[in-house]
Amino acid sequence: MTPKMLRIVCLQASVTLLMALAFWVIFGGVSAVSSALGGSIGFLTGLAYAFRSSSPRGVTPRHWLQAQYAGERFKFVITVILFSATFALYRSLRLPEFFLTYIATLLVYVAALLMD
Image (tube, rainbow, N blue to C red; front, side):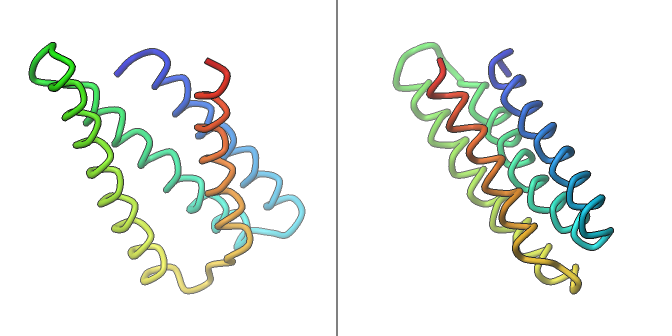
């Protein structure tokens, strides 16, 4: 994993923590947990992508591209699993907090790529 990937995942985790804390102060524990779950899906899938895509088997552009595709496939599968598990196991989920924090982590990723 490159330092840039690690920095993006740390920023996503920080945004998750800050938003969960804000929701806890304003709305209480259920909102904070919902927020933390949404943000966790955002940064854990980013972490999964970083680990899977940063280990190409060769040094040619073709190997690098294949590693990126494999990382995206892995990220998609992990995202589906985590969303499914969250909806199935956490019955008190507050959707606005959940999705706001998830979207915020995605925006951190997009913003970090645009600033490069």
